[in-house]
Image 1: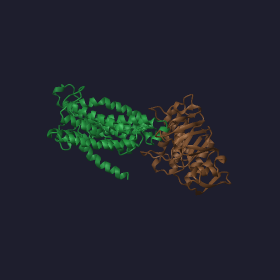
Image 2: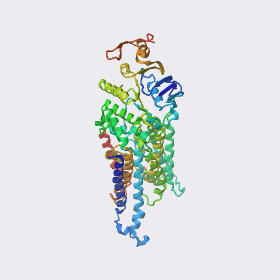
Image 3: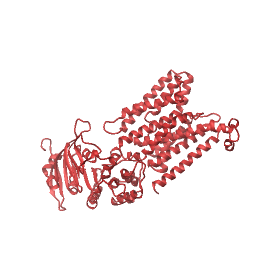
Length: 278
Length: 333
């Protein structure tokens, strides 16, 4: 269980961008963090990943403060998938995915056959094994995103023998920052289907930030609505994705319906003028 | 093919190239010598002209070339990885301009003192590069994490411009002979006739290469960007600082021996990446070995092209490196 309790963070120590957020990610959770641009979603993901530390409050993994865990131990449990990945040099897809094994190796150690087979398995699971020798920079947006997800999966795979005894072997946690924001519709659905499959078949816990209400409604089991660094509402889809909450979150009047597929769908109708919302 | 195999093959191939350059270069020159006579130890050294030319005149120069080339090429790789910018060079952040100012102060004001057996010009040039590195580092300290690469670049470029102005200022007061010596130093020259400058810079360079060995994998991760690298388990702040200081150290050591010899630090890393790919665990050793071989080869051309006139090697590297750099820019368009 990954838990944030009353977490506060500011980049300049004056204006907090995350203000007292509490949030639970169960070991089999699929949590969506929803909110408009600049609502603090990305910063919250950084706090959850431990790459930034809250100035007040705490983030814990199975009851232990993230700050007490080493970078490598943390990286073997949780991996981050950024919105976009740009490389400075021409690595192949395989080389990029192989970088996920970094926290499993000693300072001068090189990847062994075990690491290669884990990475190839993850490329296969994300449907990118046939791209492994292609240059990462030449891949499409959706392909890049799937290769980075494969790297993340390889990072949290703890089947290897070098694992310290005290580390738990539960499936890892993926934290994805707007994974579909720069993709067109086809790739959006492709990545969404992949995340669903990874969660259901491999038991990976997933936290995904997005401003796409319908994507979140079709994927996640729990939602957290954020606005200006504060949690507006959190809980199951039915309870959280209401017309009233959408209005408060985005200042948009929307129709909320249930689709025959069983998913809730939101159809934006019009933007409310200032003072009309909230 | 596993990485281990590729590493061995890369080091063997480039190592053989470097070794061949180091053994063959001292045999070539305006006076021809015989390798058999050089290593004929039955002749007393004082009477063996071939051995004297080999061991006293040419070998120090060749070894200095190999050492300077290795330092500059490896430092170029590390700076490019740190700045995530394939067009960075060892001199981008002002290390060489600081060294140049130090060297020229020593030349102009005739600092004759030697400390720990190190003569004034290399010592002053190294002190100058340390000062430049300290200034750039202080400017680039970001508030929350590691070094801001944008601020590093900006600080380096600004410092380069300012130090160049200082160099012109000092040069205005220098007499004719000093100006000539300074100019020669700025061209980059391996005209050394003893092992002393090489030995003096060796400990610093060895320290830097120790750091490079550890940095190879972190540099791979840094090319993902600092946030992604951090979430993969890398301590980005430590890796960036180690890269900045070790690459600066290697550059300062190289410049103290040969002056600011241009283009080695950019041409070699790019050529090596074309040959072995971008993985720093292969690029770093290959660039060091290839850089050494390349500079020894360039120095051989400098010594023989217009013999008996000996050109500064910096002119040769610039004549080869300039067009190559342009070709790179066009190719990457």
